Amino acid sequence: SELDLLFPSEYISNEVRAQLHPDLHVRVPLRAPTDLFAEDDTITQIRPLASSDYRRGHLSILSVLTVVTDPGEAAWVAQFNAMRSAPLTYYGIVIVDKATDRIVAVGTVFIERKFLRGLGSVGHIEDIAVDKNQQGKKLGLRVIQALTTISENSGCYKTILNCSDSNIPFYEKCGYVKKENEMAKYA
Ligand code: ACO
Image (cartoon, rainbow, N blue to C red; front, side):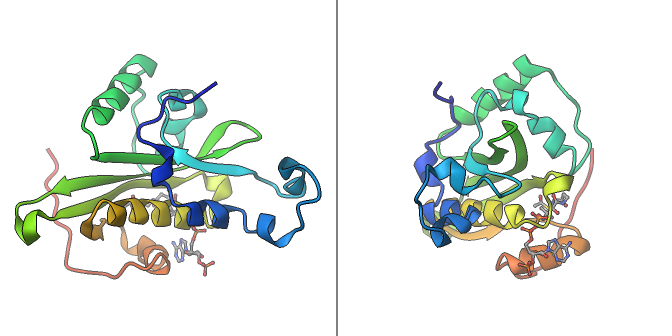
């Protein structure tokens, strides 16, 4: 059945999709595409967040990052709908393990409209997390590449994010550079 998506899946770069499984492009496709991946440990798909993703472990992947309180499915779906009702603003994406139908990586870019820079926009990357058992397989890199492309295709003059010192090397591998400081005031 069709998934109910946060935004059109065409916004996700085909180049990033292809790089998720580079093996496919090396091997000769003599068999059905699924067979091509038979030797791989994970067959994954990158796509927009869907209204049914609460059931695919969305919150448990986010809990890799920080404290997550489970609001229950109805409240989760209400938040999904609130994000979708702000058009061209919230782009949540997921990578799903097709064998288990569970989410293995998540990330968001939020598009902020400004008055400066000729009514420019800035993309804010937020809430990046990869399943502990799937880290180090370039899933985080693919999430950042997909979100950065969405930001740039939205006309953003820059894409920014906050991270811990220990994650700086990861973001440098994704093409980001350290700039200025983060300030925070927790309520
Ligand atoms: N230190 C040094 N290098 C790193 C690190 C690190 N901590 N993490 C990844 N890299 C390198 C990888 O080795 C790889 O390098 P290579 O291309 O030379 O092989 C490259 O960065 C890409 O790494 P991925 O395999 O794509 O990384 P992964 O899928 O594990 O995702 C992530 C990285 C998102 C940081 C993941 O480890 C994670 O979920 N960590 C816990 C949650 C977290 O900290 N999230 C980010 C918070 S910041 C934010 O949300 C804006």
